Amino acid sequence: SREIHLASRPQGWPTADNFRLVETEVPTPGPGQIVVRNQFMSVDPYMRGRMNDVKSYVPPFQLDAPLDGGAVGEVVASEAEGIKPGDTVLHGLGWREYALLDAKAARKVDPTLAPVSAYLSVLGMTGLTAYAGLLDVAAMKADESVFVSAAAGSVGSLVGQIAKLKGASRVVGSAGSPAKVERLKALGFDAAFDYHDGLVRDSLKAAAPDGIDVYFDNVGGDHLEAAISSMNLHGRAAICGMIAQYNATEPPAAPRNLALLIGKRLTLRGFLVGDHGHLRDQFVQDMSGWLRDGKISYDETVVDGIENAPEAFLGLLRGENLGKMLVRV
Ligand code: NDP
Image 1 (tube, rainbow, N blue to C red):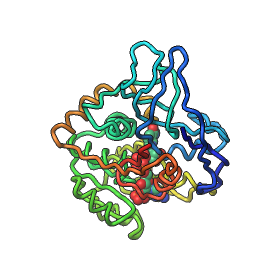
Image 2 (image 1 turned 180 degrees about the horizontal axis):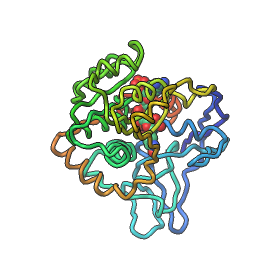
Image 3 (image 1 turned 135 degrees about the vertical axis):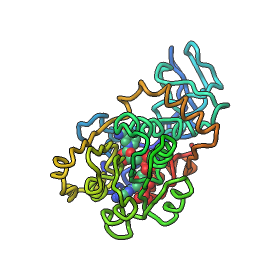
Image 4 (image 1 turned 90 degrees about the horizontal axis):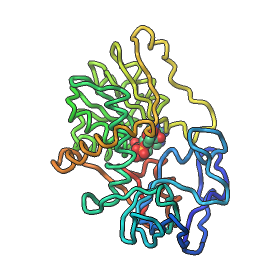
């Protein structure tokens, strides 16, 4: 069995040297435990923060130990009630071929309802993040205008589509390449722009001439500044992520226009998907229905092989993914 360890802590942008591929024995389960042969694992932007040795809402990764994160796979051995070999489970021990865990830490999923990778993307954590952030945190209502950044990514592409389904008057997305901009238009975004083409502030003003009511922030920095500048009275922002600064070694230069919050009575609200588990059942029901009716599309970018998981993670930070970045283990 092979797994990926954190060999050293990155300063700024991570490199391949920060990771190490390690050979171990396939584990055997103790009482109450299962062994899972991972099929897909997730790489996520938040993992960059866990590579730093700082106190945060999730503990840092340990050096010379396997990384962890969302994964889905098939149970190959079980000493637990209610889970048997052949079952498919979702759990938190990615970055390895075989995972040994307490059955209590795994959730059974139905591989006949959706491709198993979907439990890490559209039906999983990033799907719930989009749903909860847009509808609960930002409380988007019909006839409102919405802007989302990193819009061709896993969370962002779902935010835009859910906004349209919920009756948004206009949905605008930003992304990092012309191909991604084309994809957003195909997904039903009313307007989309490449943030490399001039100032985000100008591009957003042109794409949403009547302003925006809701901003779903995945990027921070110049995107957040532009959104504040374009926001209408009583606008709300769901602050989901600030990927533009995850590898920064200096504090961000923007936003410089926070004083606008006062006159426009804006609300900027940070959130963590983990606090919105109460919406999971409703989310799964809505999202399954939209998928079944062909009302939502989702993209996945799949990298093959556990040995390429570090490269998949680096590719995610560089924007090489369309939709969810996954590793087929
Ligand atoms: P994505 O699939 O969106 O992948 C990340 C994308 O970010 C890349 O594809 C890239 O696309 C874009 N990006 C990278 N660097 C920059 C930059 N400097 N400026 C603008 N865009 C950049 O990832 P996720 O959907 O998994 O996550 C999206 C955001 O949501 C992240 O900020 C993440 O931290 C956050 N998140 C927060 C959660 C919460 O509970 N609060 C839960 C899950 C995710 P491009 O080519 O367009 O640059």
